Image (tube, rainbow, N blue to C red; front, top):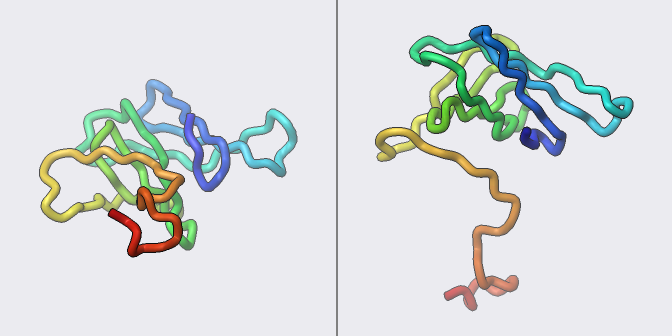
Length: 115
């Protein structure tokens, strides 16, 4: 269960080499879910034990996914292709979290007061 683009999202794991991502939008009838996309296991990944959509690209053509806790990829919704997200000087796996508040602590609108 997660939030994607402000909407409730669930992932459906089957014993198949793919994961379906379903979304519940406010304008849909109560209790109605629609399948947003299907992620098929990419090459080089043994299994899809964990898939979490993190965010949509600005043009909403790609979804940033975390796969198997540590692999970050852009998933192209039209082609179904993957692009591994590389983070400079980050060795090994990376974990991602969504933050919906300010990264600046102690600042009350006056940058000079930040310690």
